Each structure stands twice: as structure tokens, then as C-alpha cells.
Length: 111
Image (cartoon, rainbow, N blue to C red; front, side, top):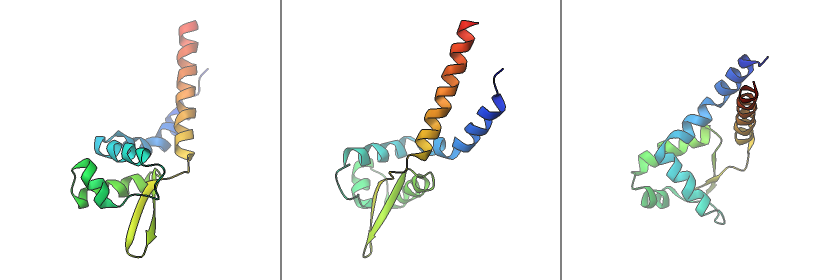
């Protein structure tokens, strides 16, 4: 029998990460950071140009992405450079959750 309480717990632990990924503006930021993967990070002004959002809006989205451990930053003097965080813990948790769901769905198909 499937342990759905474990799946509920997994999903609960992933909720902040999923909320961060679910917003189209944050998705645009993530994609742009992926496109610029060889750079040392991007400043808010670069992200403003790409997303057509205001500086405060970009800062708000970056805060959410940092809290979800998707984006990190480094400082050079007074400048912040944002980049994709290399900690893949949350991505691996999501991957494991989806593998469990697919396994349950396969079991249902075979019943």
C-alpha cells in the first residue's frame, strides 16, 4: 500500500520551491540566468532590461528566489551579482517526489 502521508510531507516541504518556480516573472529571471551561465552573475539593472520590471520588482523576485535556494549572490563593493545557486537539494527533492508519483501512477495502470 502506498504511503500518501509521506508524499504529502514531501510536497509540503517543496511548496516554497514550487511557489518560487511558479511565477512567470521569476521563470524569466531563471531562464536569463541560465542563458548567462558563464558570467560571474548579473546585476539587477541587467535583469530589469530583460524582464521589463522595475528595480524594486526584480529585487522582490530575487528575494523569493534566494529564499527558495534557487538564486544566490556575491558582492563586489556596493554591487550585488546574482547567479543560479549550485545547491541542487531542492531540485533533487522535486525529482524524487515526481519519481514516486510516476511509480504510483504506473502501479495504478497495472492494477
